[in-house]
Amino acid sequence: MQTDIVVIGSGIGGLSCGALLARYGFDVTVCESHAIPGGAAHSFTRNGFKFDSGPSLFSGLSYPSTNPLRHVLDAIGETVPCATYDAWGCRLPEGDFKSAIGSDDFSYVLRKLRGENAASQWRQLQAVMEPLGKIATGMPPAAMRLDLGAIFTVGKYLPNFIGYGLDALKLTKPFSEILQEVVTDEFVYNWMDMLCFLLAGVPAKGISAAEMAFMFAEWYRPGVVLDYPLGGSGAVIEALVRGLEKYDGRLMLNAHVEEVLVQQNRAVGVRLRNGKEIIAKEAVVSNASMWDTLDLFADGALPDRFRREKLETPQCDSFMHLHAGIDAAGLPEDLDCHYIVVKEWEITKPQNIVLVSIPSVLDRSLAPEGKHVIHAYTPGTEPYDLWEGLDRRSEEYQQQKRDRGEVLWKAIERVIPDLRERIEVSLVGTPLTHQRFLRRHRGTYGPAITAEQGLFPSGTTPIEGFWCCGDSTFPGIGVPAVAASGNIVANSIAPLEKHQAVLQELGF
Image 1 (cartoon, rainbow, N blue to C red):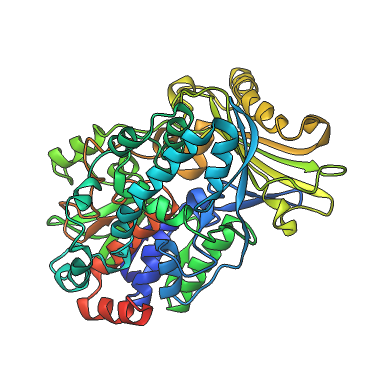
Image 2: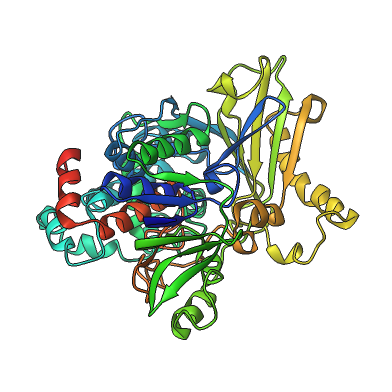
């Protein structure tokens, strides 16, 4: 079989890249190892309950925004219907409360919780971040490419930054440096430390000011709302697949790539586990993690230095998951879609933070009538070492699942005290589950690359015609970031004139 481009993996990064490349006119084949597309963002159904496997927190899809995923969807002519909301529930050491997003709402929460001084510091932080947000969102990832053509696509935006002076340099620093200049209130600092960790798997000292400036521009402006895709995260995947197929691209399921074929230092295709070879006339793109990508090459096919750098990159920890389907009879009508549960302010401590999602409060189609779906997880804090070598069929493994999963049950019980009496479906996932079903090396959330260490690596590689996208490449971890990475790689492969034509069509 021959195609122009093979994309390995159908996560959001891979599908964004593949759908855009098809939009640019390439013959694209996306190879997915599993029976359903989506990677960490797929949805699955058990006994009538539809669950998100991973991300459930979205923004900028229901309205024109700076979200790179929205830009990809616009480019391929697809939309994702969403329910919107503007607050989430908090169960913190300081107490239980509801936190609204938007420019002024969090100040009101802080004033009640911590007093006027904390609220004043928050407003000052917003003021400092406002110009940085304008810079961070002033150059859309849709314009970026990794060759000299960037002079013509990115260059047009450079005049927008004239006048910002030293502010632009602040974007390259760790966010903690800005935070420490403005914030002395312990709760405000802890809150921002937590948001940094949820966004990128690292605390404030590890995340770049640029990434946080983007978040401030999106979440803390007047009238902002958060989105929940109707049909779950799988609805986003379905939209990307529709875009891919609309432009004659193809998605191959149960197509596990065993090896990237290399001839004379050029990627020329892939070999599947069943022995079938797919020849790629233009390029091969991997949406797998950097460590899983290394395993796709025969010994000696990659330069030793490149392989060594990837192997030495630190990893974020993994996850514990609980997917539950429950009887909702008698539950309050005002349940929030999302809750954050924090036992103590040690952000990276294992089993300390749990995120709880109850998306059926917004989308009743996710559960049978009178029921709710719940997804609770520890966000990148579960050590793989505790699970390494365990036999998934053993009683030891099952007991550890029960023990390590207890924190998830207790977190949901902070919201629904009689949870266990309501259970109809329950599934506990571990780092081994993450590794097995999501093809994630050691079940990791992604590279733990801090702002002090620099930016995530670009999508280029020493192998001609071989590219990488996803959460192991720039801009990094998270749904907007992986969509941007796929966009950037697609742009870099596409001819400049086609890239410019799409930008013009999008109004950039």
